[in-house]
Length: 170
Image (tube, rainbow, N blue to C red; front, side, top):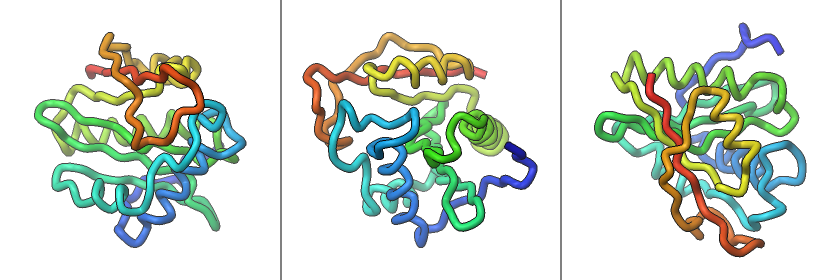
């Protein structure tokens, strides 16, 4: 995939519903390697949660568009000396082409230069070893912090779901 035509743009509130739809399609849809539909049901997020995240004064939602579709989104919020990354989604039809790696690199570079952070934190459902491995290949390390799965992210289909925290220091 040629990324020279792709550009991260700050999302506007008018895009909140499209971002919510993309995230739900990415994590609860039936296709794509990032789907969690086998272990979690229900929406991952909604327009109101996206709008609330966008209102955070030290945060940015970024989007990348392809013709006729929202291709990807990623959220970054500065918290003290680190940045939290979340809501990271790549449209299922564009997955496994290096787009996610590109998006993550772009938002990390933005955070280092604009937010002046050198540490990134995120969480991933522990039962998603392939997703954890993706982030580990990008330099993220498991912190050992494991928590119960937050039920506001969707209803578990399996018992005992947890989340793992990962971090990357640059």
